Structure formats: structure tokens, C-alpha cells
Amino acid sequence: MRNEAAPTEVGNQYAAAHAMHYKTKDLDEALGLYEGVMAAYPDSPEAEYSRSQIQNIAKSVVPKEELVAAQVTVAREHLKFEGPPEA
Image (cartoon, rainbow, N blue to C red):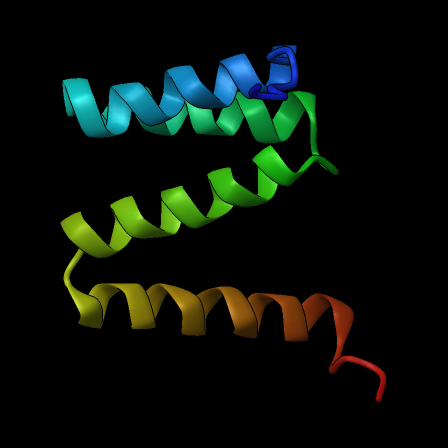
């Protein structure tokens, strides 16, 4: 006997994003759907999975040097306005 939980709304939305990403391979649409999961359910496990999937997409389409340059820029901007993190 299988004990499967009923799908939740956030689970359904994440599944749609994942299908768009891996089955349909429409990465732009998948990015939007993953963003929607994170916006609607920011503290859910699916939001964390969505963040990981967005990073996977970025790594697959953006050259590594550009990703690192973007991360350095974002870090510097945060340091400029927020200062170093408290230890």
C-alpha cells in the first residue's frame, strides 16, 4: 500500500516549472515559473528547489566568467549599502 500525500498548490506550481525546464525545455518560461514559486511561497522547500533550479539554468546558459563577474558586482553593491556582515 502506497501512502502518497495529496499534491499541494506550491507542489503543483513547482512541478509545472520543473516540467517546463526539463520536458519542454523552455528555459525562459521555466525561470518565470520558478520565480513565481519563490514569490508566492518564499519559505517553502519548493522555493529553495526553485532557487537551485534557477542556478542550474544560469550555469547552463551564462559563461562562468560572466557569472563570477555578476556575483562580484552584487557583493560589492551590498557591501556599499549594507556593510560587511556581522560575525
